[in-house]
Structure formats: C-alpha cells, structure tokens
Image (cartoon, rainbow over all chains, first blue to last red; front, side, top):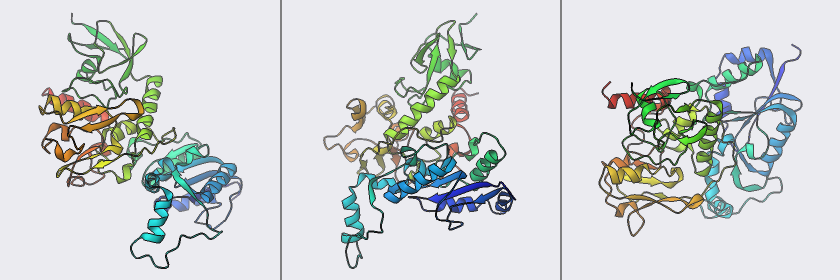
Length: 179
Length: 239
C-alpha cells in the first residue's frame, strides 16, 4: 500500500519496557500494519531514520549517542513523542544524578563486589556518559507525552489511532498513570 | 435570605466565617488543593486553589466568602496555571512515581492526573535531598516533600506535639524535625499520630505498609481526586 504512515522508534536510556508494552497491543498490530510502516526501530533493525511521520522515543539521555540519536529523530520526524517515565523525567536512570559520575564508574567497574579485571571501559567506540541523565524535552522539542512505567498497550493504541484517524490525541483519566 | 457567592455562575450559599473553599466543598464544588485539609488552619501555600474573585487571584482556602462575590474556578486560564504550578512542584523535588510506594494514593499525583498533566514542561532540578529512616516505624523521604506543612499543623493541632516545622526560605526551604540530632527517631512522633498519616505525597510514610494495597487498586487508580475529596467532605457531614 502506498503512502503508509511512517513510524520510527528507539530506546535511549530506557529498558525497552515501553517497547514491550507497545507490542502488548497484540493482534491489533496487524490492524496497525495496514496503515503504518516501521522505519528505524528495534523492530526492523533499520539503522537511521528518514522522513518519518511519527517518532516514539523511550528513555532519557544518559550519553552522547543518546543525544545524537534524539537529534536525528527530531530532524526526521514530523511528530516526536516522549514515551514513558524515563523520557519524561529521566526515571530510574536519573537516580544516579545524585552520585558523582566518577563514583558510579568506580562502584560499577573497580570497587563493586565480584568485579574481575577491574578497569573502567574506555574503548573509543563507547559513547561518553553525560554527568547527569536528563529528560528528552530538555534537548529537543517534544510534541506529545505518553506517561507511564510503562504506558499501557491501550495508551499506545489510543494515541496512535487518534493521530492516524486525524484527531487531536487525548488520554482519558483511566489511561493516565505515572507508575 | 442567606448570603451567597457564585462560582462559575453557580449560586452557592455560605455561612459567616467560611472561606471560599469551605463554601465550595460544602456545595459539592471541587477546587483543586494540596496544602489544605478542612480540619486544620489554612496555610495558603500551594496556590493550587487559586481562583479569581471579582477579577483578582486569591487562594480559595484562605479567602473569606463574602456576599455577592463572583468567583471563577474552572476557567482555562486557571486550569493552565494550576497545571504549571503542579509541574513546578514535580520538577523542584524528586518525584519518581514508579519507585514510590505512595503511587496511586498520592494527592500530588492525583491532582496532576486530574489536570491531565502529561509532562513536566520545565527543566528538572534533581535536588540532593536526604532520606531519614532512623525511626523504627515512620520514615521521611525529603525528595518528595512539597512543604505543604500539613504534618506541621497536624502535629501541633491534633497530636498536641511539635514534631515538624519548615526551615529556610525560597529554594532553600526544607522540612525539619524537632530534635537536636535532626533525626526523626529522637522526636516524640508515634506511628499512630495524625502527622504520620497526613502527608499528601510519599514524603512521610509508615514503614512496612507500603504495598498492602496492590498498585492498580489504590484510591486514585480509578477515581479522580475531585470525586474522592467531595465524598470525604460529605461523609464528614453524615450525608
């Protein structure tokens, strides 16, 4: 079918729980696939997004790569959506914001219980960590927010069907949860 | 003929000495609030109950009802202001609902749901705040304190103690306890005190009770805070 709505998704500093919840729309995915095609996404393994209608971002930004990916999505998606608690307020990963980065690395790679061959990874391929985990609205403009940890499958469904059918997306009380 | 005010065009009777909040609640009109509880002296600090009285913004919980007042409550402007205030409360603390045992029973969260707040709008502060778990039965997580002073008032006015107070000003404002050590264990608070149960957020918690009611079956999981607040008010008056 020509002119399908192009959707890209990614998980930055997230746990892929939002993606798993998205997949919980179950058989409705077939209905969705009639009008939507997936561009860059863990579901397709396409590495870069191009000219998409909707970008779904899970997770906040915790390293330099997250920032680059987020900017790529903003540059290529007409509508960019913050999906889940971590994208919206940093979530669980942001709880490291109260601990200096050096202490985090020392605990994880040098001093932690059971660490062998203690060394802090410094391969040039590894993205540099930011000193704090930040929500994505602090980096690029975000058009819509889907709260929840994760947002339920019904949240994804309600939001996407609203958009696809040309309505202003809205979530009824029962679908708005921060937990 | 009794005295009346109008709220969003609806005529509401009041008795001398009632605030706009008192009159509204008695008439079944919800005005969002966090720092207010009818049983304690109004504090007027959270500003969520801001209404427009004869064209001027006032806190409904502290402003006396007077005959003929024209009060605006549910206007787009006021609802937007309240949403912004709630967003500020969220970004000034560390409110991570998925890891908070108060989720679903939290009034801060419930007000945000009621206002359909889906994002934080502002940059997050991520302030460094302490957890005081020194007491055997009650704990304070300062990350979630919104300085409503309900615990201060409950301790003084109901428990006859003086366990809490607010210290500092502006961004440095913080909750302190009445003990030389600064620790809750050295105060005379009991787990049965009203002050230990009054917190609208997850800042003051009773230990080992957090998950007795599963997430999904909690107060605000299916009922909006306006409905809960008005039902509670009516129960008190035996209606």
